[in-house]
Length: 90
Image 1 (tube, helix red, strand yellow):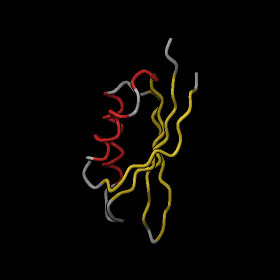
Image 2 (image 1 turned 45 degrees about the vertical axis):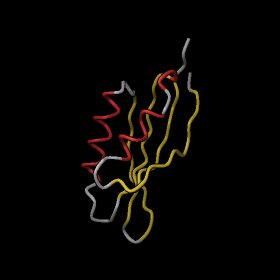
Image 3 (image 1 turned 90 degrees about the vertical axis):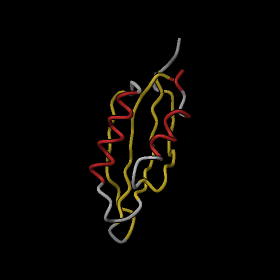
Image 4 (image 1 turned 120 degrees about the vertical axis):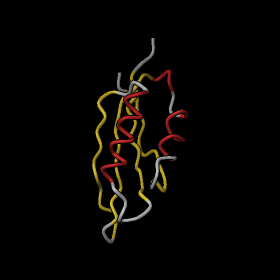
């Protein structure tokens, strides 16, 4: 029986002018299409007005994370994506 995994990513936008709401919307739509649950996105100040997005979600561990990273990285104005936490929840 597969468990539930919680994953946290840090998404860095390409500039301070990047529309973070648009990125949040695209990330949420993508994760929902992959049956992710409890999607939470918060903003975190980095420096000089730049903010990153911290994305937390849960999904079935059998799915893995490889198929999630490239599509998120390819969202317009996403400069980088970094996994900052992963753990089995149930």
